[in-house]
Length: 392
Image: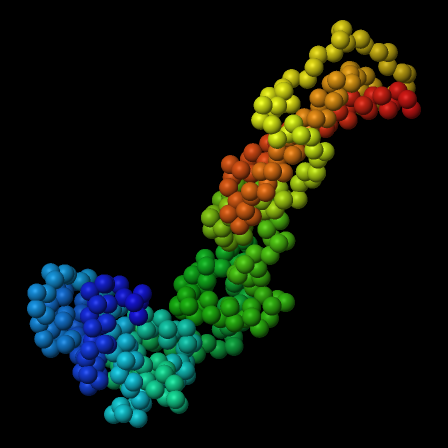
């Protein structure tokens, strides 16, 4: 109860009445609250003093000067009614009129139970009753009548779903399938079909959802709802790496840009966790004072680079290796140590990486170190390839 009210003063009033009001008063106040609810205009403001008097029958001493917006008051009055009847331990047998369950209203109006839940948010007053030894949400016949009289168009729109013929449903599915092939998103397709067929968006959405659930092998929107699988995440990340904009990827997969950025971050972190960062450790790697020397410039070779005659008959890509000078012992040691140091530092940073909420700055640093380690490795390999070719 404490978290379901929009206004603190209404939450406080409810708490007081639940704790101190006699059972008969609780039921009386629930009825008074429902009568007041029918008079509230969402856009107007109402003083707490007026509210308290209408619900409880008394004017509070030293009432706080608080005005409540009608929209918030409508919400809180519905919650007040439910909480009062819940506290009163009211049984269905005590009520002098029919009481309907959610399921019964669903069958009566030929709508889903989700539609009934939406109607409750839109003004249908519910109470809590003891039925079959446990408490359940129920609706007085009078409350249902009031809601129907004030929401005829909404109720008729919900009832129209039951009037869909098999031909109507087939037409909706085929039209949605054609639009989906052209790259439309479910929400846009649903809205456009609803306009074309003069049906509610909910009717179209529910029809397509039912079809996809019953026929997953030929679903109209496979993979467009629920969590993305690893295959689709890989596609998204590959597209991003190839230069496709986030806006375009979001349109292709019918997702928000925020969700696409989240997938990219997740897949990037996953890729970093798979990087080969095994290295040969040296004690100097943990001494900050040694970093400048390790990452510094490679030692100069003794004497100028002497060009070597390229053997005849070599392919151009092998002949180009003779343009690369061989490494001296000191140069090779420097590069080898640098490569391993970079991989060691990257692996230590990777230990701080949280795959679910990875920070871009940390991933940038890891990738930069790994890329530099790969560059150094390639430099070693390229220099030694010439030696291999000359021996061969």
